[in-house]
Image 1 (cartoon, rainbow, N blue to C red):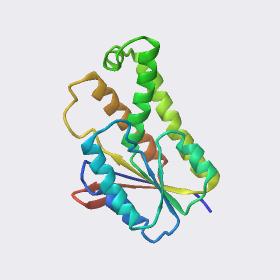
Image 2: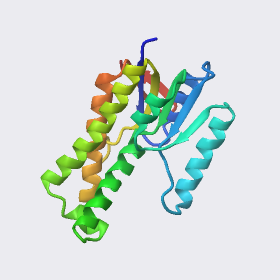
Image 3: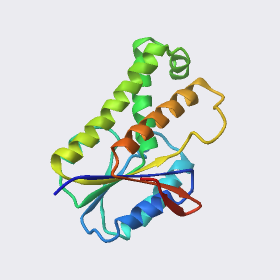
Image 4: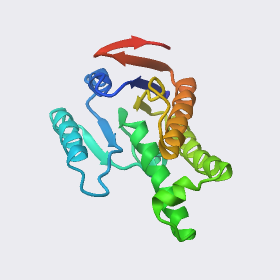
Length: 198
């Protein structure tokens, strides 16, 4: 069985997650990889997670809540398909893991550490995230499994005001480009309407 990678992108509340879920509705043995892992109390995030949990519970899919070592999880399991929702949150979590470690090493508050990131620091965290995604794609190919990846299209608005959000926006865009190049199919969802780009 050959692997297949499908990328579903779009703006916030565009309907991309619902479309991605519907695209796998005929498959019984699906694993939903939820990357929105709660690290601290956040009522808004908690509500988002609950909404997604209720939707996928009705499908009787397996759920794996994680954002780190997704490639290792794929290698150790076998499903008809994976639905990873979403790439943007996975990137954000890996970025902050890296930033927290850097802040501790430099004895700085997290916000100060991010503000003081040099171009070499940004390149290092970017490469760490790119390598994580490369390993995910390689794991799918090596095991012959398929995955639908949901991601946010974050480059259509104004330039973010803070360094932190500019760094993240650039990494999101670069990862999306790499995933789109690797993907067999790419969909852009606008107001609940999917448009096939590839």
